[in-house]
Image 1 (cartoon, rainbow, N blue to C red):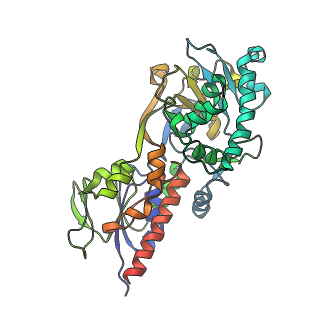
Image 2 (spheres, helix red, strand yellow):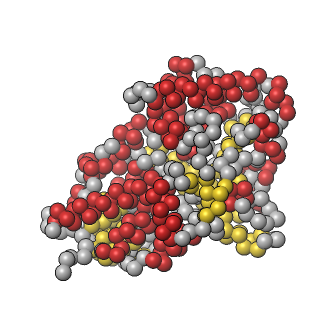
Image 3 (cartoon, rainbow, N blue to C red):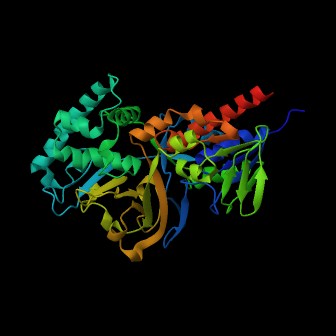
Length: 430
């Protein structure tokens, strides 16, 4: 009888859950999770609405589409996860009192929402922004026809003379919103990487946008389905203190938790790269270089009902609402309208705001959650090309959305790559 490898999966976000799901039938898998719940950024919170009763509201992973999330869609189909269509509109409000466009607000959906504030019709800033958006679509698509991976977004913008209105009221808010990134340093992002992402998602032109969807009942539905089908051992509330590399070349790694030490044939670390590096006892030089090259941006998510954080013009309310508070802010301040995104019932409007604590009425706060998102600067993108240098060394494998653009599809894709790698190592060993 063939040896069933004993595999530890550390972390239960989409990457870890996928590894456990795929490898579980043919291996003895133990899934470790430091938190009391599974799911990572798939984090659904129940709220008690005075009219509709208990409502599940997502606070992390929210939407996906068939075009850009093929592996995730296949998983959801396999699990029979119920989904409904949703919108992905985007709006911006300039709340910086020192800004020449203070009070400027719009939703980029149609003329009625662009000019939600009818004063926008006579505002030169609106027309300058629209002119530069059109030019940006053309310039970015042409740029991608070349092979320049070094030029930063800041350099691209400066070389082509884009105006302040376009950059500060559209380009940086859009980029900072997509990656929950520091808007003050997002310009260092490699232009080609950003443009490839935007083109892939149908965002470098008018039309040809994918249909976005959300999970009925919240993202925890798919997490619960995966857990129910998993035949291995699940250990929640079990932080991994240390992962020991084998001292004997014929041995395997070990996982140390508050409950003790456990040996495995392989360990898959499905956590953020900085967390992975911190877990490894005696990391080698390549592990330190690659895992240590990716920085993370902390972001505070607040679930609340204070519509005062939305545009003062109702027609400008969008699914994603970005607030510009100052020219040097270092956090993305945006609000997801979960009532619109999830088609929620109820007497209140449920919102999730990032890094906006001081602008929210404390009496309307329902939950606060700390998240962290990878920063995809040049060093991070270079590290992503070095997967093969650390994969499988000493029985350790690494997966997570940080290997891609930081989204759920990137997490599942990295997990499937590791599962293929585990199968390859098993064939070689046999």
